[in-house]
Length: 383
Image 1 (tube, rainbow, N blue to C red):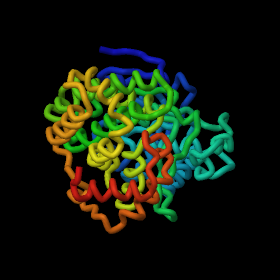
Image 2: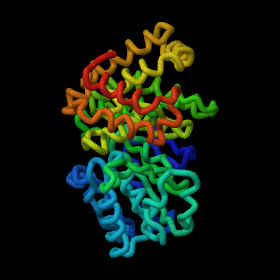
Image 3: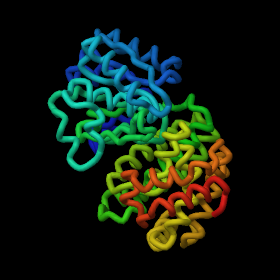
Image 4: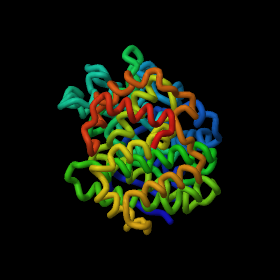
C-alpha cells in the first residue's frame, strides 16, 4: 500500500519507503544533509540504516542528536553550529515532535541574520527571515502524534523565560515527508498511546475551533475517526502495519487541520510542559475531558454531529464517555497529579495559558482564572 500525495506537501506513504531517503535528497539538490534527531532515536538501528543508505548514495551525511524531549533554544543553537561547521545544505528531521521541531528550527534559522526568537508566531514576524536562505527540509516521523512533519512551526522552550515559543515560517513546512510505518513499530505502548492522543487533541481542537475553515474541519472529522478505529490496535499490537500506517496518516491530518486553530488543551499543555518538563502528548491526553467539559456550552452542537459520524449515540455525553473509555483502554492517567503535577503553580499556569497563542481559537475565551480552574480540576480529577 504505497501512495504519493501532494497535500499539504509532498508525502511518500508506505512501509519501507525510508529506503528512498537518498533519492529524495538528490531530487532537492541536497548533497550534505544534517540529520537532526533525539538521543533515543539516535540509539536505534534505524539511524544506522538511514546513514548507510545516504552514504551509499554518496551523500555527506552527519548526525546531530543533542535534543531534549522539549527542545530548547540551546539545542537549536547547537544544531545551527553543527549545520554550519559541516557545510550542510539540507536537513533531515527524524523522530517524534522533538526531533522534527528541532530540525525544522535549525533549518529556518541557520542562514538568517535574525534570531530564531525573532520569528515567534506573532503578527508578520516571519517576514524577518529570508525565505531563499532556508535549506530543503525532509521530515521523517517515528511517532504518530505531533504531525510536525506537515507543520509550518516549531515549539521551542525559551529557557530564560520558562515558556514555549512557537517559531513560524511558511517555508518551515517540509519539502518532502516520508511516512513509513516500519519506523514506528518499536515505539513502546505507553508512547504510542500518548502520541496518538496528541494526534486526537489536534484533530479535536481543530474541529471545535470557531474559525470558518470547512476543509480543515472535514480533515479533522476523518482524522478523529481513524484514531477511534486504529489507536487501540496500535497500542495493543505495535506490529500491526495497517494500524501504524493509519495512525501516521491521522497524525499528519491533525497538524493539517489545526490551521483552523487549537484551543485550551494546548494553551494549558504548553506552559505545563515548559514549567514541569512533562510529555506534551500525555498532557493533552490528561487535559482533554476537563477542557471538553469547560467548553461544553459552545461545542455541544458540533460534538453531537461528530458523535453521529463516529457511530456513537448522538450527543455530548456520549462523546465524552467515549473519550474517557479510550483514555482508560490505552492507559492514560486520569489526573495531572498522577504524573507528579500539583496545583501549587496553577495560577501562574493559568496566566501563561491565557497568553498562549492557542487560546485565541478556543471556543470560549477563558481568562486566566478560568484556565487556573481547569488546571486545578485536572490535578484533582474533578470533571
